[in-house]
Length: 112
Image (tube, rainbow, N blue to C red; front, side, top):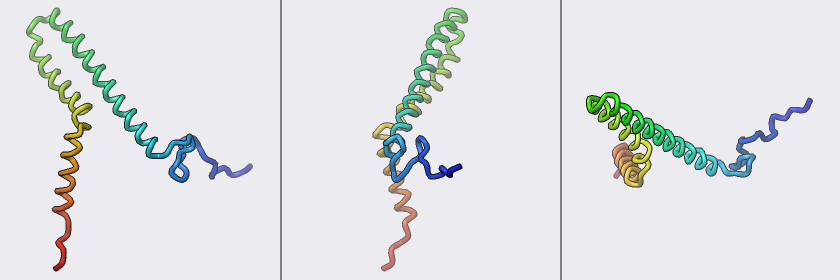
């Protein structure tokens, strides 16, 4: 029986390329896009449940349910920020500025 340990397997990278012909950078971009789409899908599902449940609770319990709706809505807003806000250009710029500050702070002093 021949040793096929060097044979390419699906998805295995060889010289910067995957066996499917895509570069590893393309594969990483695809996975990141897939993760973001999944996060948006989860947010939309949560929003749908929030609206449907609160309409039902409004008819069943009346306005006494409002305090729960407010807290649940706050949690949903945090979820939306996590999905949409943290990838904004403003947030990425802020992160870059903070990284530069930290790197400058940790930089050893130059000798004279």
